[in-house]
Length: 194
Image (cartoon, rainbow, N blue to C red; front, side, top):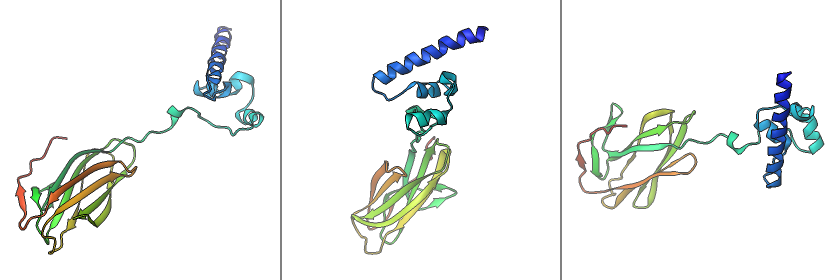
């Protein structure tokens, strides 16, 4: 008996709220308000979802709230290092100038707090000429390491190596350069805390 008395005012409140939302132009009706409140359509009128949808001329849905849609957690670029090599998953040095005919490695430390693996797209340019494009997978991780390289041609004696990095949604994570010199210049690499 007590449950019935409490249930009826609750249904009335849901109907009142849904009417207010419908008047404000949001497109919600009593059925969608019931779904948002976690109630079946039968709690309001005794109809099933398909009967209500047929009466309204719309498809039956299980959720109508925008907040129910999944959101993509962005990939965070924690560190990008140009290096002359990668050993044991770490850069061997910091490359401050690249040498013609040698590899230019890009080492990444990324954070993917989403529920699935994601991809990043790398595009290496040498003096505005796109040379290398590669997609790398970024697994779910607090600090994920990955790397790739571009080999300079012997004739690439000056200018810059530019690297553009975007995630799988097209968000630019980095757009950076390293100069090209006659001889490579390096500094010691010190791992940064994640």
